Image (cartoon, rainbow, N blue to C red):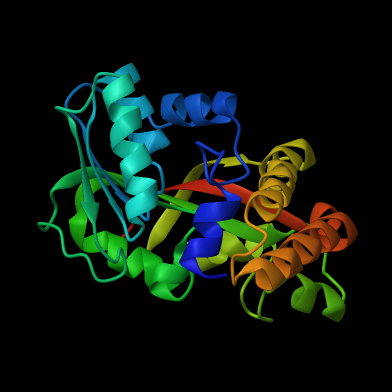
Length: 247
């Protein structure tokens, strides 16, 4: 999906993943955040996580994203929560961003491991910025049960793009990280992420009938509804995995 289509479909979202406000808050507690902890979030989207945690726990954060639209929303959210002095947003490709070595207590990439070509590659990108005793957070899809071949095509996932829950833990282990906690989305979380996009896209089509992207947006809407209802809800899981480096 193009960046513009992401910006359109998620225009009404604050959290750009199948995660609720309550689970985002719980994840912060699971990470045992403390005032002054430094947090780097790669592909931060609208910055809800870094701004919320800066407000709740006194963390300092840098969020990196390629979308100016999302970053404008992120800066507005930081201002709403009165944390603009502790949260910085950088417009850049998260896959090539080069932070200072070992500068962060927490490095995250939630739902965007495409920046490193998958889980292992993304962890390789994250490691240099992470202090030896720090935590890495990765948000990733996994298969709840083995999917039929047609589900891969419908969901736009390559054969090696997702593995089982245990397989995901193994990928983290092979990349040199120990799984110490996790928080998984449930079907309702997926619904609250996917279904509002259908309303947003439908309304966009009504409001922009002359836009040249109308056929592609209509196809995206139809594909999103069908893939989620026919396959995603049954086969596709998603979670945030809390990791500690082992080497």
